[in-house]
Amino acid sequence: MISYRLKAPGFVKEFMRRLSYLLVVLAFLSGCGNKDKSSPDKTALSDTTSITHIYANQEPFKGWERYRYQNIVFIHPPNHLHQEKFEDFAKIFSTLARQTCVFLRKEPADSIVIYFYSGVGYGMSVTQKDTPFSDGNVIHFWFPSFFGPPIVKHLLPKWYDGEPKHKFLKDGIIALLDGSSQNYHEYTLKFIDSGTFIPLLRLSDDTTVNVDAERYQSAEAASFVDFVVYAYGIKQLKDLYSSNGSFAIEVERVFKMPLPQLEERWILFVKTFAGKKTPEKN
Image 1: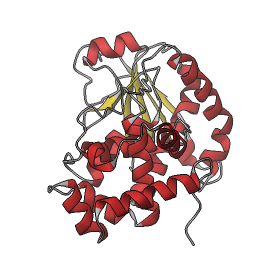
Image 2: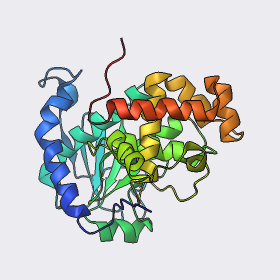
Image 3: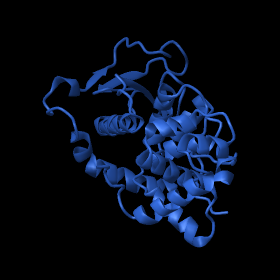
Image 4: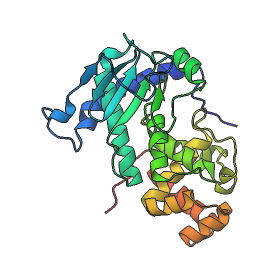
């Protein structure tokens, strides 16, 4: 089985390469739809005196400081290693949050609070989690990690408050919006050409899909999610996402066609658009 694990050797190097890419294109991304740079909502605030936050009275968060830029609020340990880049990172988080809300067709969040740990060991030891996550109130984040997944995990419950029966759909949304700039249609086409493609029915029952650890099943899932939203719309995706019946039956109900026919359309979409940006709908 092919597995693209995020924790494999070389991930840190790849992450830093993609981080550099994000910082280079940030001015363009954050400029889309924003006000003039002189507008007051872009003022960065750093308050190190008697701040309050949701975990202010809990160890080890006592004495942590606040940095705010636009709608992103970092709560962080003093003298954070990446403090000089907080503004850049906040712009990336803000842009990805906006893109996630556009994709889900929901109103943007007024503010997003991110507990920004100073390293992977620190974050894991405090949270007892392997990867950055949202606890429903705030995001817990540390490097190395792509910026997008914790943002999507934070916003998804505001789109649909519940866990989908077919987990691959959730992992697909998170992968698609992970901010890594990867083309998951290209991944899927490689799986098709190599004979390792996972059919939809098997993918829908696959309990090993894990967007935090692989880019095999979750890459296919991202491609499928993108296809559904492009070809049919976010309402149809949400209908399928929230369904409780067997996958084949729910597909026929939502799309008015049997599962094999929908899969054929997805594969044709992949073969058409792999290597290209998905075109805008007319």
